[in-house]
Image 1: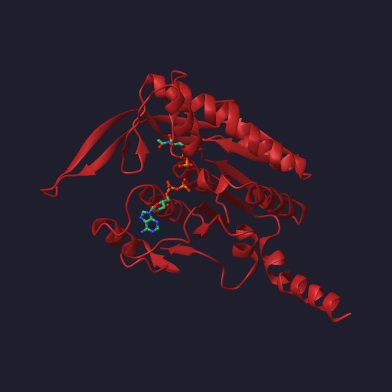
Image 2: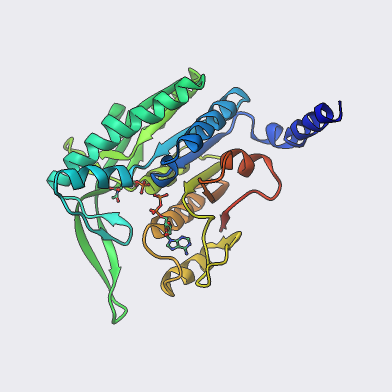
Length: 292
Ligand SMILES: Nc1ncnc2c1ncn2[C@@H]1O[C@H](COP(=O)(O)OP(=O)(O)O)[C@@H](O)[C@H]1O
Ligand SMILES: CC(=O)N[C@@H](CCC(=O)OP(=O)(O)O)C(=O)O
């Protein structure tokens, strides 16, 4: 009997959060690395379906960096990263689109639907969901100056077709977005999935942006987890190189999302089962919260 009462107590603990978040939009970035483990994939899909059933509106943006690397390797294409962004020539763009849209997107949609959700896969080209323009990457030189570097068909999102997401949400569908944008001339752009998640969250004025990754959260130089950092601290951690590589676009997009009206932004450990539920429905949460 006590077991059953304990179960009821766990449900009751979630009640204030259920009330607070009912009807709100939560944008979740599902990272390439967190997609590697079968058990975690299933637990992620179940979490998303549960969120939808209890009245939240999850919007999924997926990555696929490791999957792109694998296919590029098969084609003998070597790729380089500048501050966490893949340098993308025309041949690389072809592979990026094929893997993200044709493979990873369909896999995530299938996974959610197998668990009883109604997921719909979209790339930024569908309904011009993600209108993009070419971006130059800023690289700080040794003398402190900042140089703009051309990294090919890499874009930033300049407009999100919010009406399309609203329509899907009204139909009880779960949008699953591949980070490929479309330019004014119909050309494709490779966009970092964290950047897409941040822009989509800001456009939808989401309650939360949650980025799942393969580490506990943001760490300091000694490797200690930082449970909460301000945007100012974040900038210091980037300039003293405590935050490097793929973590840079993650924290930057959290800062942009907060500036764009998103209430909360979190970077959490996708290797932990039910990480999304733990973040949303517990007081302490998990990982790192970025605050303005
Ligand atoms: N300060 C930091 N704290 C935590 N991780 C960091 C930090 N700086 C760099 N990283 C690296 O960022 C990686 C996460 O970025 P990325 O590989 O692009 O993840 P994902 O594939 O989940 O999007 C971590 O695996 C870690 O190696
Ligand atoms: C411009 C850029 O870097 N695009 C990324 C898009 C996929 C992505 O972001 O995947 P993860 O989240 O799994 O790293 C790339 O080509 O790898």
